[in-house]
Length: 196
Image (tube, rainbow, N blue to C red):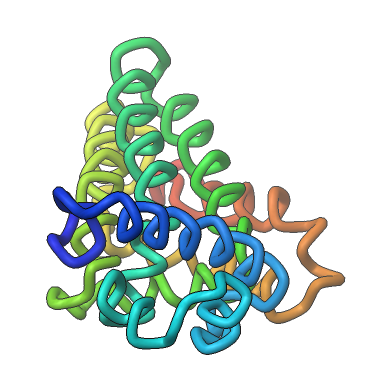
């Protein structure tokens, strides 16, 4: 799901070029500075006025949604494919590893995504919805197979995994242990009677 403000409409050729130029430069600036990058810097480096940037992307979340839309859609499709091709726990583990890699793409992204969980007005919330629902279906499948405890839901899982990304984001020395931390979280989700 996308917002009208972030999707290119039928526009004049120069407006379409501006939209794409802003996105191309935003990828670079956000990679350098994180999700709290200066929008003024994005506009300056894209050689457009701040008003032009805001006409295409009225909020920071709208710009982030446009930057992340493809990755979110890929993760939603990946959840569906894994749900049909892999055993329940293996599918969930693999999808969560993919999600963790994607959430580490930009500094601050985990925090931005986590903040949108309860903000239904945020373009990021809408963009993440299909991805979160795909992960929730994998979770339910792993719960039905008895691999994961049944007292958590998709929001709990999403919050835990995003928190691992946030921790790695806050302490770069821990970033290389993100995969291990994710494994620890998943081990903690084993059914209670399976824990020794």
